Picture 1 (spheres, rainbow, N blue to C red):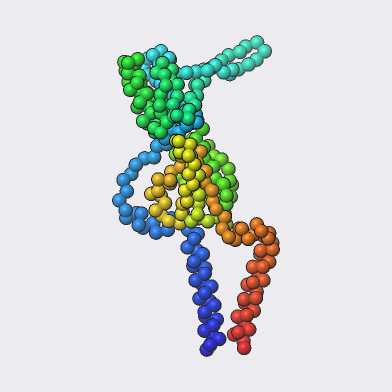
Picture 2: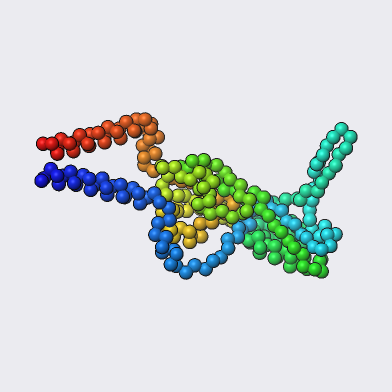
Length: 263
């Protein structure tokens, strides 16, 4: 009876250890809490930051009125032995460290920290003395990118065309975490509008993460997936050696159990 109890204890310990490990694997646990919480839907809109590259297009029914407000540069489109033609290309605006740009006719505009919608509305208002009708102003971010490094399948830097990406979309681009990635210890490295670096720790096991102000990423954010202790051990002694020790440990445990049972 005593031997059976010891065997049962080993089995229970193994089951408990397995359950404990599994809890660290699934994303967004306890999602029922989130579904039951009243959430005010608020569409995400990226904010303009220093060093952003922008294109700004002003349009109206009379194209000639908009010409002074659309900077273009000439670029060679077709070069042959006898003919050279050029096409206008939109000039890009580089946001300076103070969040400003030099806009034609209007001069210096402070748009850093504004969303695209806010910046577009500001420019429309400033154009009122020059264009009688209400023009259409369209701003696009050219260099919106994020980086994912650490324990993911395909680390790298990714360009975001729609200027909107969340944590899980970023991980999907990088092929998701490897088995060695710590889902409860993901680091977000972000630079704010004042040039200050922040490191935020995120727990992707918790469903509350989608309510975090860091759930949606900003341009130039870096996601670092921390490796777990198993990866650290493997990097120290090599994968094959680690597997050999693991297999040996399991065999010793099984042999010990059999000896105790058969006594």
